[in-house]
Length: 315
Image (cartoon, rainbow, N blue to C red; front, top):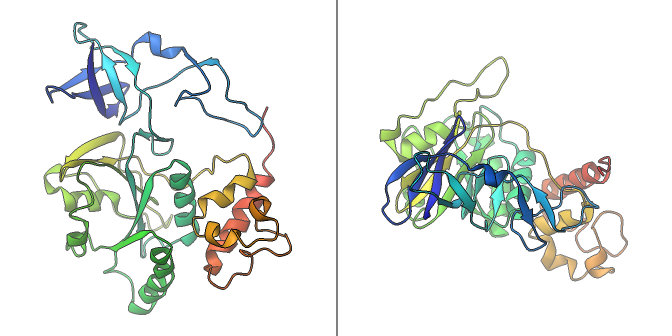
């Protein structure tokens, strides 16, 4: 058995880089992966409803891009026999063992969405991954609209998020990104049409990743990435993933949502009900109506809270 890392998945076939020899091979998952007995401590074990308990159970585990795996080098199909424990994973995009997510949002075409940005941040914080915010197409937006976006994003910088502004076609702003990739697996994610493929082409011109124009009729981009793949770059690896326009907040307990709004913690210590405060209707809440919290952030929080709270329970 040899150890490798999955760097590409397309059409049910996996591409693995051997961690010792650095050679690339094609592999298939072994049938033994279909049924794995998991205990409470397994990194593959997770709650799928509010009432689900983490317990010993048998489930199907599929390899993901980014997985460290053991494969049979004596088999012609290089069968993947075991998936090593994951430090984290994302579902959409479908990648494991990620160090940071670059959230690409267009300044315009499609319109910049703080609602979508906050949804991305929740999912990334929940997965315990570092988010980096990148605003693309800064050359296409008028100065006043751009200043309005920058004003609100200054708040995100203030609470601890890195924010970068780029023009991918002219490679403006890319000098500030040079040192962020080394020794890291980075995922490039964001709204459909934000220019993910154009951004990757600017980083790595030799890739020649296919791009398409924004569909004017729909006001959003067309899916151009058809598979998930890790590309070597600047001492690390970057994952390009299939685009998507709708995010699903996979939370089943609304009271946990506050944990993923990172600025709430410092204020919540002053809440009348302490850690039990969910910052919605409680008297003496230090988060609700706090002038130091960006209004749209708190509005998005209350919106998501109600959505999660009103979900029908699955048993």
